[in-house]
Amino acid sequence: MSALLELRGISKRFGASRALSGVDFTLHRGEIHALCGENGAGKSTLMNIIDGIHQPDEGEISLDGRKVVIDGPAHAMRLGIGLVHQEIALCGDATVAENIFMPEINAGKSAWMNYASLNERAAKVLQRLGQDVDPSALVKDLSISTQQLIEIAKALTLDCKVLILDEPTAALTDNESAALFKVLHDLQAQGIGIIYISHRMAEIFAHCSRVTVLRDGRDVHSGPLAELDADGLVRRMVGRDLGNYYPPKQDETSSGEHVLEVTDIADGERVHGVSFRLKRGEILGIAGLMGAGRSELAETICGLRTARGGSVRLRGRELAIRKYSDALREGIAYLSEDRKAAGVYLDLPIAQNIASMALKRVSSRFGLLQRASERKLAIELGAKLKLKSDGVDIDVASLSGGNQQKVAIAKLLATNPSVLLMDEPTRGVDVGAKSEIHHILRDLASQGVGVIVISSELPEIIGLCDRALVIRDGRLAGEVQDKDMTEEALLRLASGLCEEEATA
Image (cartoon, rainbow, N blue to C red; front, side, top):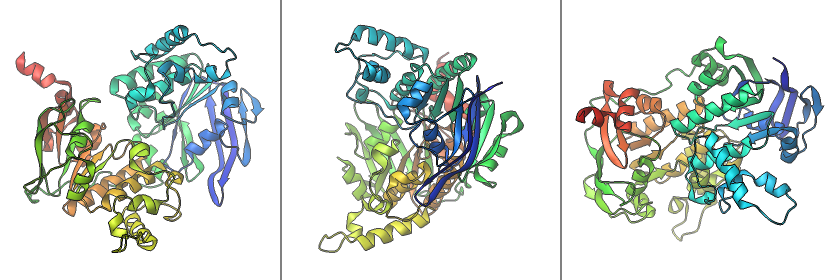
């Protein structure tokens, strides 16, 4: 198999920080090559160099056996290199078709646009991904998963030799992911080289043939995936055994006190009469298929969506939650699944992020913000969460995904919550950071905080949570715990198979 893309001795510094140090990487024609490593290992920097966003300080790049200097994303596109970023970068006020063909539109010289042709071509690309989306719809009106597929569709129109995908399935349903992998294998058969970045071990082993592992800016392993198992790959990524990936669950003798009671909660649209109770010190999982109403349930509980019925009680006292600030004041905090849009302020320092929802805590009795108190709070919570940074005065945008997520969690902890609602708390973070976040949540539970974890990853629900509720079509489909908490049991409830069998 001949080399399509070769990188030799690639090094890159950002100020005093060395992001890459002498990295070698080879992509062959017609292969799906996994690029693995913890957040901050250098994966994004390496991909940005291939895409021309950054220039290497040292090293060389060859494409089709010819040395190239890639001076920007537009040049990379002309060379046949397509990059689908993890973070969605679409124009919300433009249509689906306009976004898919944006590079072509920008390069066009005609003053007129043939929208009928554009929409027809966009529909064909989306059909390859199993999507029946209106090409004339505005992107801002679509779900996160659909927007992610539009990003991928956009790359498929570029006639790539090299396609780079960064966490492409993070927001996709199982069916959407299956359609994507079918397309990828079709592209592979056409000789296109695909670089696949994901923290999902099952995807990597199911679809990739070779793997390169980065750690601390260096390539520490490259070879066939068949020579490794999941534990071996993780060891190479983190440089150590993770030990207990999931922390021990709560003791069965733990307090039976219910910190949160939700009764017949409804929003009149996506949530229909859901009831459950959360114990003090418990981690309660909420599972269900994409679109089942899991996030909407959490948002209704904490006032981000208007409740049209039902009640929420905290330690037996009924709450009047009309907006999110009411929930925060009562001790209920929510972590959004969309970290970049609703979890952190990327362009603000760590200290200002962490203190942003607890300003009274870092202000004088006259209401004046005290920067010293703000920094002290950030340092204390950062140490508690093992936040890795060059100080609390740097912008959150400079942190890895896992550390950005820790800042988002620290923001919530600054409010001293009694109940934490965590929506996809480990989405887009590496295995090492995932394990750390799991242990953080268990430590919080051991201190008496009630924790609710919404996750699309069933192994996370099973490994981390003491109990799990399953939501289907905005309603409670069932509850599982102990030995009954298996992937099969959760999926049967989520898909409605249990009800079908009961009525058969």
